[in-house]
Every structure is written in structure tokens, then in C-alpha cells.
Amino acid sequence: QVQLVESGGGLVQAGGSLSLSCAASGSDFRFYAMAWYRQAPGKQRELVATINWDGSTNYADSVKGRFTISRDNAKNTVYLQMNSLKPEDTAVYYCNAKIRGSSWPGGSWGQGTQVTVSS
Image (cartoon, rainbow, N blue to C red; front, side, top):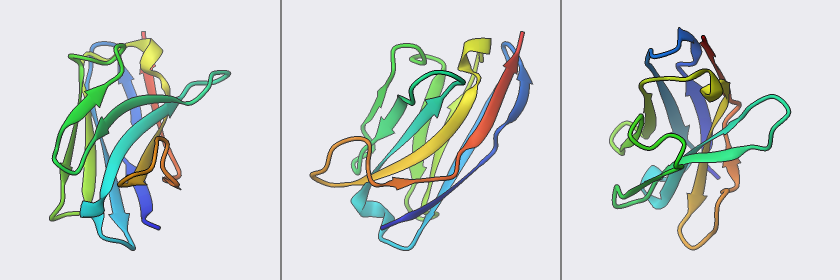
């Protein structure tokens, strides 16, 4: 299984931007589809965005037009650029990986990174 380590969380004011990174190791990154999930206090973990092997992407309706997921296979890294942040985006953000043919969520999780958006 691939190992995942997130970075880049922090505190930002509403309307600001943050960029998250997730570094993968231990397996061939190209064979994994990648995703970002988030979990707010008292809520279930929810899927934010996915990116497939071919670079195709999908987004939750709540973040469409504000968040962008991307990947750099040469660096074994997936990114989440978050713009126009809202207080409701406050959550712990998790990186997730799944192998081809499996369903979301995949079997590999990072430790999570806190994103806090103040109003």
C-alpha cells in the first residue's frame, strides 16, 4: 500500500486561499487514483475531490469553482488548491488513494491536516 503524508493546512480568513499537498511513497503513484476528503467536527467524512490516473477530476458541489485538485506524478504528490474559502470549509483534510478497480474511499489514508477558516 502507498503511504501518504499531508501538509499545508492552517488558519486563514474567509475569502482567503490555502494549498494542501499530499506526498506518496511506498508504491507506484501512477497506479493510484487520488482524493481529498474532509471531516468537520461532529460530521461524517465527506469526499471533496478526486483525480484519476488520466488527470480527470471530480468535485463535490460545495467546492466546485473554488477548489482545484492536481497531481504531479514525477513528484508523487497530489495537491488541493483552495480559494475563496468559507468558514464551512473548516475541517481536517485527508488524502486518500485507491488502486484501479476499487471503490472510494481507497485503503490508504494520510494523517490529516487541519484547515480553519475564520469569519
